[in-house]
Length: 235
Ligand code: SF4
Image (cartoon, rainbow, N blue to C red; front, side, top):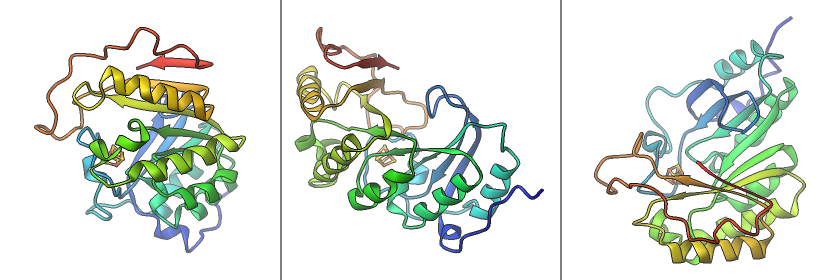
């Protein structure tokens, strides 16, 4: 039996910059393949995938070859995660997700929420979202280098929390970008929004462009930072 679902012409336009065949960490508890979508409109100094930031690049992976690979992994993997870059910037994502679901996989998405209307349209097709929150929402430009970028992120986060989709909100902390006071402000905002699952990720140099940030020794969490969430973790 052929492993491929019928190829949707819109989905073939998805720009894929990378494919991880097996991951245990992109969706906690699930064995996934991870599709790295090309392109991101923000410019975070700690970006671990700077090669995925341009809207296009050399050596893109065709969507048909991604589907062929996934077809060969049916019953071996639990799910497929779309990551980036920022997957929601691509209009082809919706049809690509539909094809992955047609193969029988559950679908996860890593997003910053920078495209709130498309994100809201995708939510009914998603089983899980890893939602990247950069900072207290009014201070996003300090990290993203894009004016008012927190507005779209907040709109998307509200959509996610109003849906029934499982999620994890996570924030990467570098001490020169987020102070303990910032983190307490962020905690208050997230709790007020109703966030129940929150993970703080420590900045790591691996993959980041050298020279944009000083090396960071570790996270210093305010004493009561983790209280209030149903699930809180650090990585
Ligand atoms: S939003 Fe994500 S992919 Fe885009 S620049 Fe920031 S860290 Fe990199």
